[in-house]
Length: 197
Length: 197
Ligand SMILES: [Zn+2]
Ligand SMILES: [Zn+2]
Image 1 (cartoon, each protein chain N blue to C red):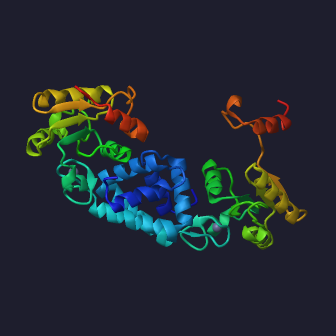
Image 2 (spheres, each protein chain N blue to C red; image 1 turned 180 degrees about the vertical axis):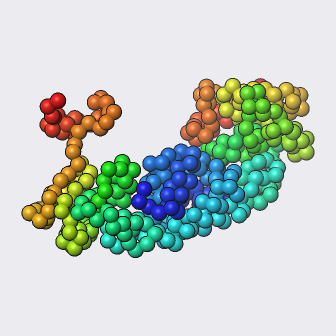
Image 3 (cartoon, each protein chain N blue to C red; image 1 turned 120 degrees about the vertical axis):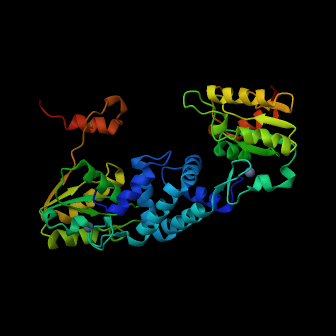
């Protein structure tokens, strides 16, 4: 490479981001360098700002800029419905789809015997707490239709049985499909047609 | 979106980079936020550093961190060979491929009647200068095999005719390339340029 060390290092870091590879990282960095005053410098400032302020909500695991996220802080979203998702990306996908007016609980993964991930490694104890403390009447298990996702959903359903209405997203979520890959229409249709477990 | 304004703005900026879209930008930003101390903050620092130091070589148009890039500064690369490319990405690709020991000249685009891009909008006058001032003996026109790329190559060849040896990259089937995956133009060019075994 003829470029100097910082530029090479920048390409290398960008290439490791999910969704990018060496080729798209090089193209992105060239683009950023060409527009360095307009684009690269503001992007760096914004990243520094986000690095300093972004944090996980201590209640639900969503990402925001305060200890309690906007959704948990919004009184009108305390409607008794709690949507359980694996990941913040899934929460964002649900919010983009619209239609859900309650709150979320981000597990931060799924149970996995293979990777030795148990309930304590996820936000499952906190979920059980919230069901009581926030007066939850319905828990919507919006987990991915994968083996681990469904194992996790069953585990949570067992824990909460007879305490709360338990539902899952309706058909429309394809087998093996991850929420974050779905179009907004599919997600809102599945939410509307949700069923008791 | 439930995330706050800076996070949304960061996703939006990342989504505009070549090779990324909204979905990969969201995934990249989530990944960066999760590893904000290890990844996001160092990446922001590096971007700020590159934004402050990166510049185009005033001689060849390559990107580096000084007014004269490493290749133009290297005396041993003054071997009389000058490789003309459209873009810095092409220069980087040539350097990764290895084998070329001379210098480069980055045009910064191609002539285009449609977009009203003439010789003065590219680094063509500078190229003509360099051929004399750097004692160039061979100009390799490594332009893309597009209509505009080839128009530009012909224009430059006209300007430099009888002053220097003019060559272009051989066209053919790439090493390991399967015919079925190649465009027709490449195949017919390779057929026309066929050689006895
Ligand atoms: Zn929250
Ligand atoms: Zn140079």
